[in-house]
Amino acid sequence: IKINIPKENKYLDMSKLICNSNSVAVCYREFEDVPDLNKGTGGITSLEYYFSAIKIIKTKISNPTFFIFSTVEFDALKKLDFGENFYFINADNGFEGTIETLWLMKQCKNHIIGNSSFHWWGASLAENKYSESTIIASNNFPNKNTIPDRWIKI
View 1 (cartoon, rainbow, N blue to C red):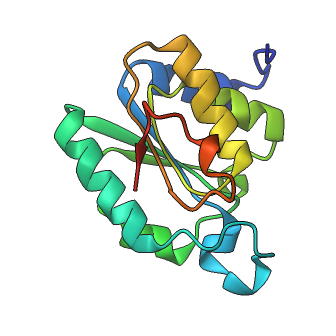
View 2 (cartoon, helix red, strand yellow; view 1 turned 30 degrees about the vertical axis):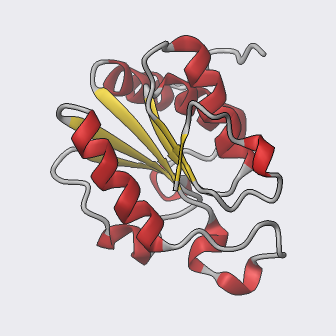
């Protein structure tokens, strides 16, 4: 699958930050913060999952920079311990393009994904680009065969 390089400077500038760091995409769905919106597609990925995944990443990746992908800046995300190096990539910050956002996810070397096929694609495409990726996935995908054995499931 080929995704065209975005033309907007904000995506290109963010890509430079991503590619020049030990980047970790933290992918958070709207449903995680607003349970009433969840339509029963595997359940809610808890905030505890993200705490645990970040802790694992910090033991595996030296000086990680976190790029938080979500639709907006949810209050729950502000509770997570990203340290000093983090950026929000969402509509609140002008990143509204779906394909462009997927392209940015693909630039990240490592991923923490919840129960989302969109985020799964971002991690999978990045893995094709980087041979040494750490990908942590929620174990509540409806189809348990969705997550490759080489990924960390929690």
